[in-house]
Length: 92
Image (cartoon, rainbow, N blue to C red):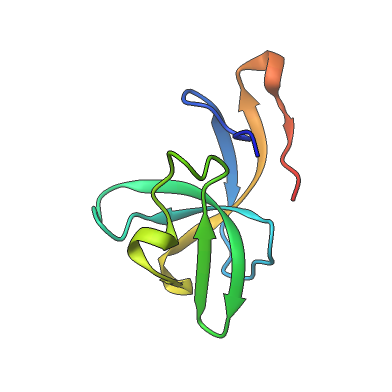
């Protein structure tokens, strides 16, 4: 799968912990707590969420750091507003 996002994309993120498989989410990086990362939800199990990057060969995700607690989620990305030529809703 090709990456849905590229460096420089700017996203509108709505605060929520209610996510479903396929949602793009912003979350605290489990390895660097002062950093926010963006990943796609692969699985939701209780209070834990498994996230994967769209570029599996070059992505650091739950395969490296394990499932993430829902409390670590900043929210769900719903819209890319920059760059202008790529703006629009994000899809599952």
